[in-house]
Image 1: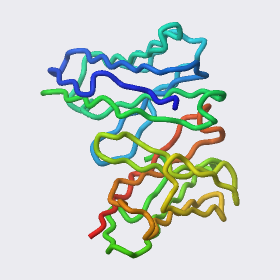
Image 2 (image 1 turned 90 degrees about the vertical axis):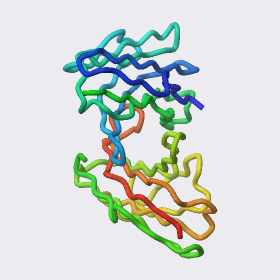
Image 3 (image 1 turned 120 degrees about the vertical axis):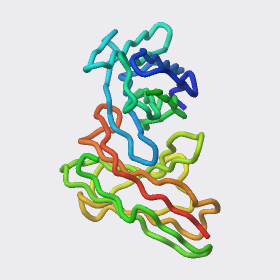
Image 4 (image 1 turned 90 degrees about the horizontal axis):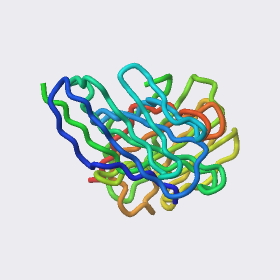
Length: 113
Length: 114
């Protein structure tokens, strides 16, 4: 399946530091989305990057996409305690996923105040 | 949580009983989905619906059933045939094709089988 695989599984940093999470996938994609999930809550969409884009910004978030390496990264700058959450990537391919949408197991980020 | 409501927040069920989880959205979205989340396993797709009166199985549909009689509503029934139903259930919706558009998630229902 076209499941995203996030790395690392867990990340712990001090408030104010930057956090980088990576996502790898197996086949060509149309787009890739990143979501955040606070403990015991639903997922919240963060950003969508299309296959013809290399970088996208949204506030303190920066997402990059390297289709040649089949990977994406999510950078959170100047992290805050409120950024503590799990982060999921979801690569999408209209051809290879049978029109389905697969989430990985996520990166658990802890920001220490 | 973006105009999607799920109820109840917590649900307890005895073994052998069917139970229905509610999902309602007021976003006028065509597509709706049900996911199951277990610790350390991410989200797995149970069922999805792209239009009223139509739905398709996801990866783990066995032991579950759905209906889509109204655009706003997509209830999920966990039947007694589901061997390990204790999990966190998430409902989501999107404007159209699930991959092209962002998904909006409800707050989830935590089901525990006693």
